[in-house]
Length: 409
Ligand SMILES: *Cc1c(COP(=O)(O)O)cnc(C)c1O
Image 1 (tube, helix red, strand yellow):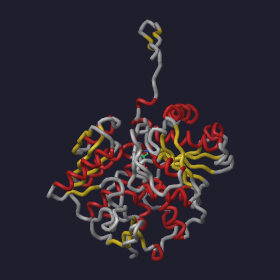
Image 2 (cartoon, protein in one colour; image 1 turned 45 degrees about the horizontal axis):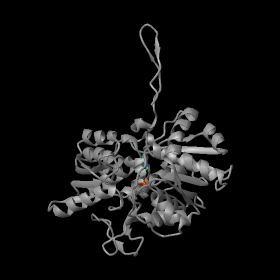
Image 3 (cartoon, protein in one colour; image 1 turned 45 degrees about the vertical axis):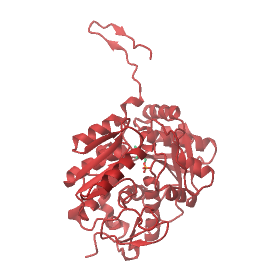
Image 4 (cartoon, protein in one colour; image 1 turned 120 degrees about the horizontal axis):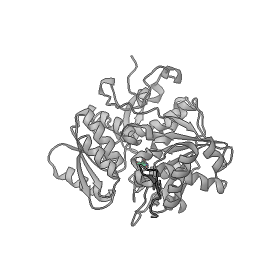
């Protein structure tokens, strides 16, 4: 029997120190960089045809995931979200083909469930019982759900102004929630202190502080390639906060090329941020390898409100290596694109997802994207979990038929 997972070791992308993948690991002991999982790709005998008939979720790619046995998989049915054609939105943007990968369909309402499914499964497999994390909301909601399903404890530190629905999700699934007066970076310091002070066995699962969340998120890349018939689009546009999605998609597509399941070149990867928090864009424009902390970070697209990402150098590497770019969009414009996309296509995007529409419009206007480029946008969450993005101006009809117009706001 070929192994369920072909995981071989963990590798530091900065100092290239190798680490044992069979015990729990955080960041690189030597240089503090996030670690990346490496697989024995040459030993993988599976071909794309073998996937036909497998379970229709992200675990269909189990050879390329870190969990060593099917009985260690913790699942709520995540993965294989629709890759939807957007003909009217495409015409509106001046494109022939536009596709949206709708991760708003995932359990807990955002693509964070991909990382949580794989991260929680692997943490439990390696013997963790108590997890702790800072979050801008969606990750806390997702990890709380999967921790509950796995029977693990979870401490969640979330900024007080994170979307309130994600607090509800966290509490509803039994997460131990702390509201932090500050940004995700402040929540991160709170968790790191709690983990360091506590003699008991806490495992810090903050973004990129453990190596397996990214393995879950990379399945977006596998699915895009499989859903296109094992080929790659020209451009992938991604709303970037901690950067795990971009790093993950880049890693996934690189692995597929190495396996010979798809042929290069890789798509140009586009990082989208808000003008209210754009450290990666600033670094890209300066041609830098790392970002500087963004002061006073603020945007309605809360999932991308990350002033300084631990994996910023990996995000920038992915952008440079694929001939991609990074752009910032205004909150007003992305909110307008929530409405426009809903009206044109019936798809209610999350603000982060709408930011990719705005960015595509901008890059099309600059001719950075050509009319015949095949473009894939990532909608990373459900519009439903951000109800405040669309004001409702409906008139009220009383029983006798009198119409009352809404008060202007
Ligand atoms: C977390 C999040 C992002 C940012 O994802 P990263 O992979 O951390 O860059 C984008 N959109 C939503 C809805 C999120 O929750």
